Length: 248
Image (tube, rainbow, N blue to C red; front, side, top):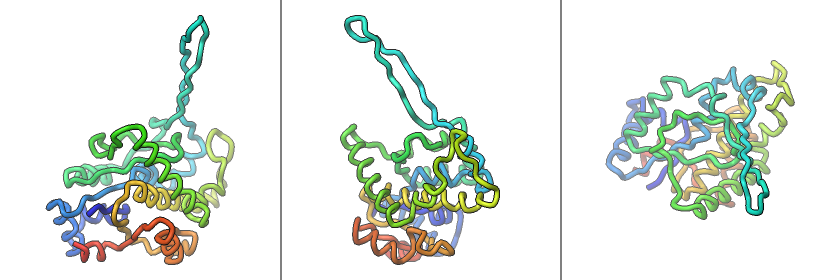
């Protein structure tokens, strides 16, 4: 059984001794559950809430340009666009310790393919990543992820909250101090949406979260109305940690 775990569950599976978290952990050890974590959560949720606005305001993706010799004396050019990993603040030590324990337990990480220039950490162990066998499989994964992410955005969730602040970065927009908390929450909503999208693209069985939408209401993809639409459109089954323990 393949289960993608939200941050509010997998970290507690590592840390806590409540009965249902222990039960999940034991089933992972026994190989009855294969646990997955989403890269976007490790990349963006690891950024401290009070520092997210500052990072995104000043962030510039890494761009490299290389001259390429061609036939007949012509000269071509290769332009590569990707994340500027040096800008990332790093995964907090306690969360990094949890991640290494998760690796020892057998957790795998689902890659982030939307917004390829988005800041990323280099602290995720390479052997945790789920790798596609060939380029066609990779693009299939990326296409499925993008389709689900776009659907979630059209619901007004996921990246929709972040998009209200665009363009952020490259010195193009500053976030007023009174909006910084809202921006931080927008990053969290983006993470939720693309975590579900990565789960869908990977074809896993259940997405496990204890997020009940809280004060975000229908702006959260985990609101009951949005969950219903998501399951109808993509077959995504969302369960709580207690339900995951019962499935075991």
